Length: 308
Image: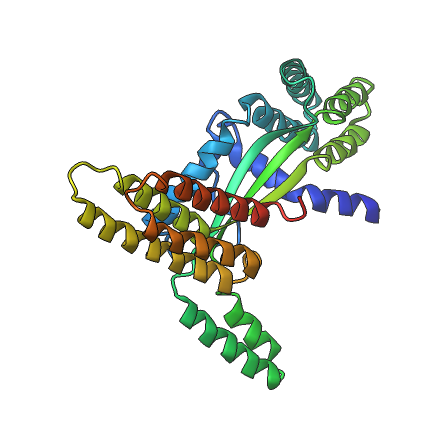
């Protein structure tokens, strides 16, 4: 009995997804709702735009059949719980057909993304403010006020967490077919248990993208484009470029003090950004911009995929 409760608990979040999708499974997962635990304050326009861009990029890799297959599995489970075995059978046969389509389209793929959600916490402060909060947390910890320290440290987050729910193509389709057989044999309860097992096969992965690094990337891109603007004098464009690169460095300093990545990674970036002032409007500038952008990309990927 305990085992079954654990299985149902593990699938609970996915069940909620199915109920929320209902018949509207054709709606893009890029519009998924914010996860529980998100800040109650409205997201900034900049954060919303960043979220949309990141979701849209990943959503292109998530075929609609995968999202519909999960929704169908959920709806079949609900039908069984309502003793509607005919509906459950019809829905699962449709799910099986969609999974066959996915297997044919992506024969070498082990995981197929189905649903993508994003949760954003955008710390609106600077490195000095972070230092003050950390110092206060240290004082609270010395006084053994652990929960008070934990509460203020929880604000020191500036990131987007992207959660992808994927279907394992090696096991999910066969498990659906097994559930269909159980329904056909009149074993409703066993079929219901089997669907809980199927839903527990879904794989969730979380990517953490530091917002200050994303903002620094945008500032560096804008700075590099200014060098080629024909409506600015070289002196004016140089001034604007240096303002943007200084702003990018500030964003990187915030990312560093918040603990995203290693100090060595940032040292290399600061040196590259500082070096651009000596080569603006020269034939060497393109190589410097590429170096900065590649270093930023490397840092972002290292934070998003630690250990790789």
